[in-house]
Length: 339
Image (cartoon, rainbow, N blue to C red; front, side, top):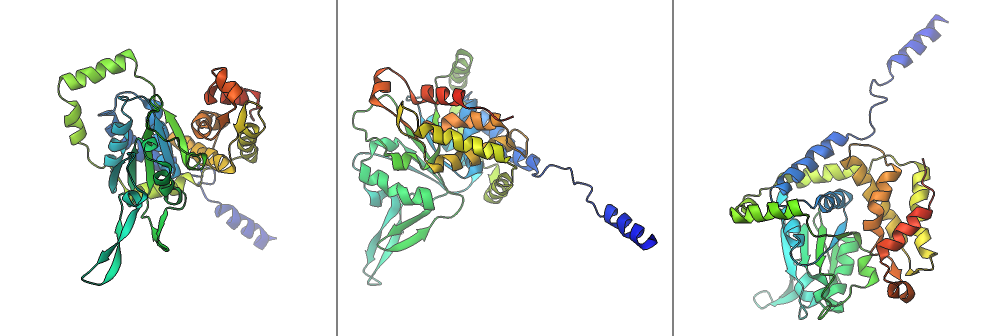
């Protein structure tokens, strides 16, 4: 009996003291993202939701489509984010005459070596800004299918891998449609978020005018330096993947996606890739808010940005003046939120 008691005592002593500690060290991620927030705030006035969703996409390893009228800092935000990360950056201005080879690269004949060598296109970078993505024709847009999904490019039967991290930030104008080419559903589905950028408020716009009046705007942007390394970003991404998710919340995400496939207002619903995007985005938001577990509020917060570009209204609802966000609000209101 004495020996048994000793074994029990020993087992009790072996219980780790941090047994009830958080499953994920969220502070490490918050430290990194706070550095980005503070540095970005020196250049970007307001637009807090856009900044938070971009940070979530960065942590969730997802691409982002940013939509807004000209002059609301879409391109500036993408360029600022790229400068804050110690990684390669390239910008591609999509135009009607742009060819797929101008994006991914092409094989060029080298007469000295009497063979073809591959010349990489601008998509071979870590952070790729595609400005006015809907200005290029469908064949050029299609050149992004493989690289956005599989992070690789295949040219003449040869596959070339992208170096991590790899994220595409694309912008488009929702108002002017002359000379544009609508993105196909297959490409829209590859973006984790579609962020709608609104006009700034009175205080924010006044602040913008003050910065430019004092000639500080351009100076502040030119002074931006990297605050996060690739290794730190990858470490944060690994931590985000460890966030705890209750089974009932996984079911809730699946129900949200499935509800879009059975609604009479929609002729195209969200795919299973949308459910995966909901999961990864919710994990990232949870960590950004200092938690190692997902809550229903995290899912409801990211749902519009995750789903709005993956669904399509019926002509009848469009004629009524409804938007995808309107339908999503109706669908979410019908769902029983788990507690």
